[in-house]
Amino acid sequence: MYADIGILFLIAMISYYRSTIQSPRMKKQAKLQPGCWIKSEKPTEANLQWLTSLRLDEDTLRDALDPYEVPRLERDEVWTYYIARLPDTNDELGGFTTPILFAISDRYLVTVSRDNLGSLWQPFVEHDRIPTTQRGKLFLAIIGAIVEQYERQLAIINRRMRAIMLDVSNIRVGDVAIFTENERKVNDYLDALVPMNTALEKLLNSKALKLFDNDADMVEGLSIDLEQLVARCKSQLRTITNLRDSYRAMMDSQLNATMRLLTVITVVMTIPTVVAGIFGMNVDLPGGGTVADFWWIIGLTSIAALVVAIYFMRRR
Image 1 (cartoon, rainbow, N blue to C red):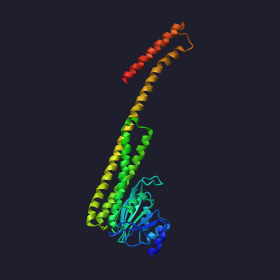
Image 2: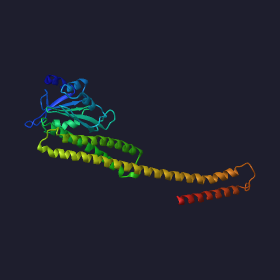
Image 3: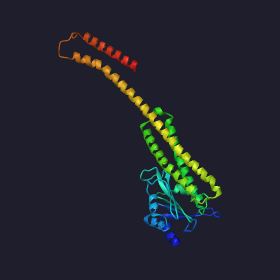
Image 4: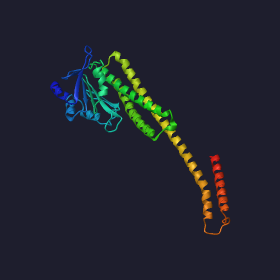
């Protein structure tokens, strides 16, 4: 039954891949066989119904299509479910990560994603020599590829922030938008990586994965990489926060200097304004008979304004 239905679904959103120790090159299959990797991207309602025929839990499948789903681990009698999040897939909802479901049984490894993940799958389909019959090793290799994508994205963010930090005094308004976007992105990464690491540790401790002795190094390295990613995210957030605080302090200093200058100008201009107001009254005033008196008033007013300006500038 699976074989006949499988041919139909190869046209849609489900593909089968299989490789063995004897034939490690991964090949696309026309029929579903034990040991296959079942890859489903943007599954339709019919695809989901077919997946449930493999005794996959329908609610968990639909959770994997929720753009806000949190990484976690679940198990039932047949399947072990591990939900992770993948960085930067240009999600139409504006998120920086997207969920992906791994379902592992004694016969298959199933991956379900709401987005096309060609950049993630390409190395496994075209280059890697990992037998799909060793489902635990293939699962760990895919998680390792996800970790590498996080590392690349964090390296891009780090280079961008370092380029801005070279000259803090010339930070522009557009750079502040970069701070905000990168902070949101790193926070999204951190929110995904922490539960991913916790769920992975639970999975490895549960012995649900069938691993071989030579997989121990892969498991240990993967756990260390995830912890380092979490530490890098926290460090990057501190860097962004410090840089934003430096920008805010610089802008406050510039604003204070501008307000101080405007205050001095206002006080200085008050003197000639008062004098002009006095001599502009429609009453008899002394010194109003000659042109020379006008220049005396202008001169004395200017000297008074200059003295006040010098005083305030020296007092800062």
